[in-house]
Image 1 (cartoon, rainbow, N blue to C red):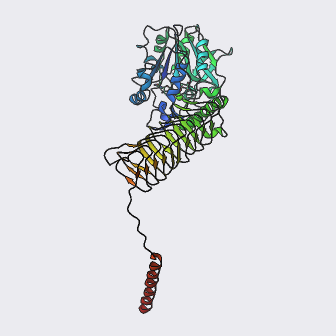
Image 2: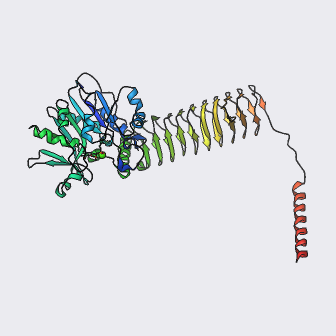
Image 3: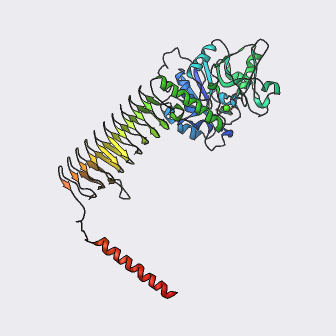
Length: 486
Ligand code: UD1
Ligand code: CA
């Protein structure tokens, strides 16, 4: 679903993206920088970076300031791969200064600069492309939107001919201006030629004493040039996330957008409002997602699989025709026609082959499981290599941790682990070997052998009857003492 980065190609691409992400986001009331708040497990900033890259920008600059290390750490994969460059804004004195901060790194560049806000995550790359096209030959073009409730946004001022004559922030607006429902999305396309000279002309004489990027409109008009605009047909794209309430609203819109995309691609969701699919999840046709399914990270679900209800899968792949019911799977691979759950917990590092069954209340961690192996009930298996066609009886456990070090368990093909076997690692159970139920296996079991480790059973005949008689005698002597006492 993620916008693909593929079409960044050729020398014809000349536009550069600048994403403003230096602000604190006071209205979020959070110790976390606003642009790192998440929608479907993905930061707001990540959505904006994806949109910029999908629109084919040749360079993407992210301007950081407030808690810059934290922000940069979060997008380190983009920085390391060269897809994103960081620019610092020294003082957070307004959006005009944010763009000014990139003056040095953009020296010698020409063409278009798209300016985006790190807190406007629902913007589509198609809209950005339309904005870039519209900017051909103009000094600047602004993306606007018509919204039912413009509260909090800058308002677009137009003259009697419909030409843009200014943008006014809500805090500086008159009553009449506040009634305007066309808003500034905070997304612009500028001609780099002359941009930084224009920014220098912006002052901070306004309600917030900030250098507003929106004031560049005046500067452009004063030069006798016009300000272009396009209006997004889908006003939800323009939504800025400034508060937790807006974060929830944006999450909801993104959830619906992604779910509708996958339903169009052949995925069944009986209750899509109860499925949450992150942007970097890939689903094949004929996957069914039952209610309360949460999929995140790069996760791939193959055709015919039924996931949920009540299931979380992150950074994992699920093969064709598998069933995952009421379970959690993290950083693992599941083969074809596997059955997981109900209530299984597959922790990181598991590779489960085709037709594996992991049943009720089973926890796995860092385990390789061969084809057709069954771990049906109430087991903990950690740090193990299990062959094909193995049966692990109910309640069996790998005792992998001695308090200091984790040890490995190996179980060969076709082995049969009796119920409640304790496999005290490091230990190896050979091919076709069997362990007797309730055995504590601390030594290797040779292939084909039966390992039995439990004490001889002793039966005490007539024990219940004798116990009953003793109890009855105790009660009557207690009653007698009671009477004496009276
Ligand atoms: C801004 C616009 C407003 C528009 C709205 C759209 C200005 C003056 N106003 O208002 O017209 O309707 O966006 O969502 O531009 N930032 C920095 N450095 C700063 C200040 C802000 O990097 O010094 C970043 C923030 O991290 C944020 C973005 O710029 O990602 C916008 O800043 P914010 O304070 O949210 O502006 P708004 O009040 O929403
Ligand atoms: Ca904002």
